[in-house]
Length: 305
Image 1 (cartoon, rainbow, N blue to C red):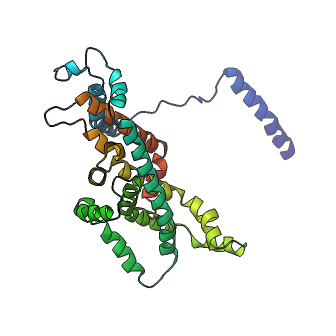
Image 2 (image 1 turned 135 degrees about the horizontal axis):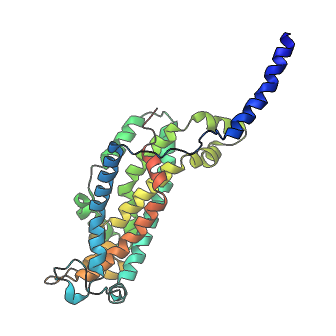
Image 3 (image 1 turned 30 degrees about the vertical axis):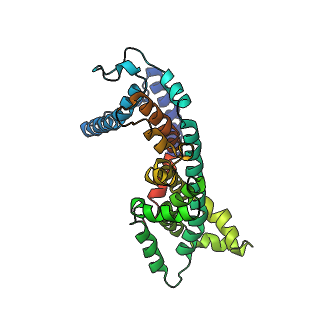
C-alpha cells in the first residue's frame, strides 16, 4: 500500500508542474530597478562639484589660448571666434620646440637614472638587515628636507667649474638627485610587502639573487616601480628653478623656462603663454591617465600588513 502511495506522489508531481505551467504562473526574473540613496546622490554631487572646480582653470586656460590678440581684455567668457593659429604661431615664433625636446630628454633621463639607482638600493634595504640600516633610511629621508633653491648657489659654482652649464646632463643629474629619495622610500615599502619565500623558491630552482629579482620580484613590484617612475617624471617635467639658473641659453632651457619668456617687462602675451601651457600639460596628463591605477596601488603598498 505504501509503495502505491509513493508511486502516486511521484506521478502527481509532473502533473502539478504541468498545471502551473498551463496557468502561466512563472517566477518574475526581471531585476528590480536599483534605487539610489540620498547619501549616494549627495556624494556624487559633491564629487562632480569638486571635479568642476579643479577643471575650471584648465578650461579657462584653453579658452584663453584660443582667443585672438584683440580680445584678450574682453569681458566675455568666450571669444567671438577661436584662433587656432595661436598654437602654430607659438611653435614658429619661439624656441618651444627646442624647449620641449630638452624637457623630454631631462624628464626621461632623470626617470631612467632614478630607477637604475633606486631599484637596487630599495631591494637591498628591504631584504637585508645590515648594520646602519635605520641610519641609512634616516639619511635618505633627511635629504628630502633640502630644497633645490637653497642649494642653487653651490650647484651653480660647481657646474661652472666643471664647465657643465647649459647642458642637458646637468639638469638630468640634478633632477635625479632630488627625486631619488622618494623613489627609494616607495620601492622599499613595496619590496618589503612581497613575500621573501617566492624568491627562496626561485633560488632553489636554480636562479640567483639577481635572477630572482628580475624574474620574480620586479614583475610583482611593477605598480611601485610605475609610481616612482611617474612621480619622478612629473617632478622633472615641472621643474623650473634649476632650469632657469643652470641653463642661460634659450635653446638649452626646459619647457617651463621657455614658456616664461612670453612674460615681458611691460606686456604679457597671454594667448601664447596659455597655448604653450596647454602644450606642456598634455603629455603629462595623458601619461598619468594611462597608468593611474598602478600609481594608486603603488602608493598604498605596505600600508596594510
